[in-house]
Image (cartoon, rainbow, N blue to C red; front, side, top):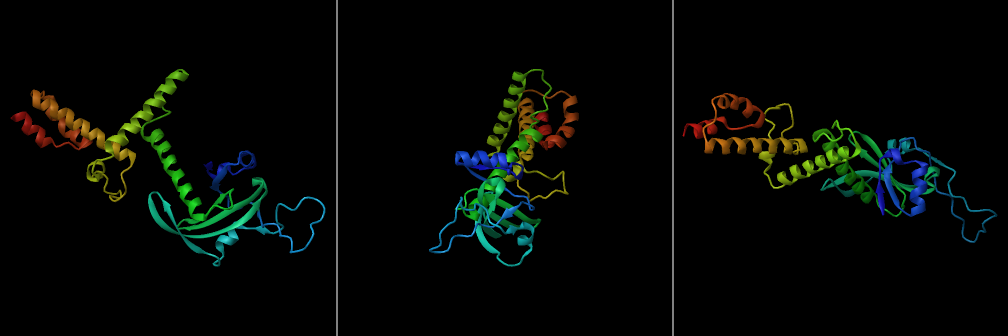
Length: 259
């Protein structure tokens, strides 16, 4: 079993639990983490002295200095966010007292600066560590969309079960929007004509999909009403305003009404 966590959870109590359970923890390290070298192995034929063997080395490792050094960098291919990317990394083994043993440490050179990751299993490769940590970001994005776009947690209800029901409703809304937009063409779910400052090539977000579904629902509603009976006089006057919100084709509705 693997657990992928942010740097907040790279603490002694968490490490103690995962070491006891035999779980692999992958996460982010602080650049000032107190890392140490590996203990020196015994020479061939040498006898170990009394007491238990050393668990930690005696040399201090500075992540900031290692990231700033031009030596030791290499390239790896890994899969992040569904695409194969090439990363500049340094990887090495280090001991970390809060982790109760040895860690696989990976330093990644990003455009924003070096990033530091670790795994409690030293046998795991750097490409696996970078891949699973990127997968965690997709889950975090879903949490963000459910809270910020669908409004989970903003309901003003009085008791526990009402809160649970509201949370489930938000989850269902998120799932249904994603399901509707799954096979929709990009040009339908990504209309940023009203935001010329935005990047038109940016992938459609959940908010874009939700707006596209709202436009489709408004278009279908007004089209169905215009086919069965003439729209009231006040509705055609409001259609341009609705078109601005829902990107409706006002001319097509006008033709249907006049016909």
